[in-house]
Figure 1 (tube, rainbow, N blue to C red):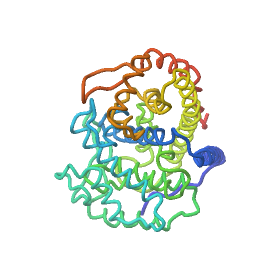
Figure 2 (tube, rainbow, N blue to C red; figure 1 turned 135 degrees about the horizontal axis):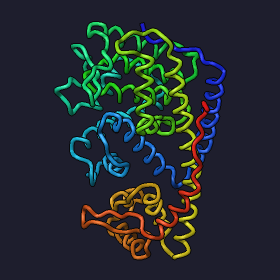
Figure 3 (cartoon, rainbow, N blue to C red; figure 1 turned 45 degrees about the vertical axis):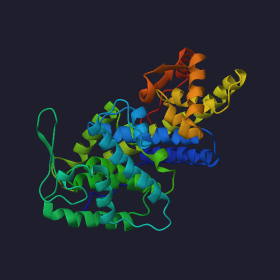
Figure 4 (cartoon, rainbow, N blue to C red; figure 1 turned 90 degrees about the vertical axis):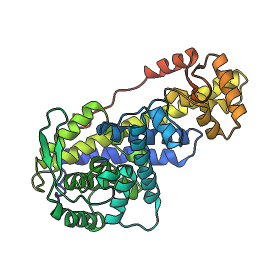
Length: 375
């Protein structure tokens, strides 16, 4: 027996309709390709990875996560955090491919494989294998048990029931609702010794990706959940709906509402970023053209606008340049006060210079506050 999908009330249906309208608008806007699309997608994936892993205490900057995604050494993240990020990124990349697969069915083997991708470096935790014993979630500050998963002998059957539901259950329910319920049921079953929270959030992203609403990086709420206040609310609502022990009963509407609100807020944020990306790119093109620089320099300037820094290797790969070309471009931009260099040789990176800081400050004043759809 799993947690039941709730019936939506009128206010939930109104929020859902707004979310679907924003996602459809995003889908149409993304149908036309732009020079900044690749960097925006990479940034959104990095922020999703950052959000989901920060909930578990694995913290890294967006810039370091992007480096890990590209197979580079991060500048700040520790080796242990790098392994966590790399494992999660591998699983999310596979989810992106599965979202586009012409033939697809959920099965327990797929879920176990995704878990292995995430935590395969923890061989002592039985990655990709259903846990052999009980599991207890404790408050990290007090040590108090806040949740006890179902007995180990029940887990294979519950996982099989969830897989059957993913393939056949509640197919007429809205995609955002099904995705939320997939998340809730998997996190409450807690089938593995580790990685259950990240797996549940990733499964939610996969369910949405399979419904082709938008690509996973544009539909995920993992970035939103990783914010401190949202993380606290996330744990609160999971405790409210699921209680302290496995027991699939009671009202699950508060959980679905929490997820709908998160989707609404994140969709607003992504819409703002998409609109801003085009405006920023065109502004930077004008500046580059005015100074007689090669138009490819816009890619480096845009990277440092949306993130905290840019590295020569990233810019070189994005624009298909030689090492010498990329290094000369970045030196020119630094000489013109667009960038500020730090470090030496392999560890060198560039942060915003005075001219870029002025543009960023001007755009920061334009950002509109997000609207809570339930208020």
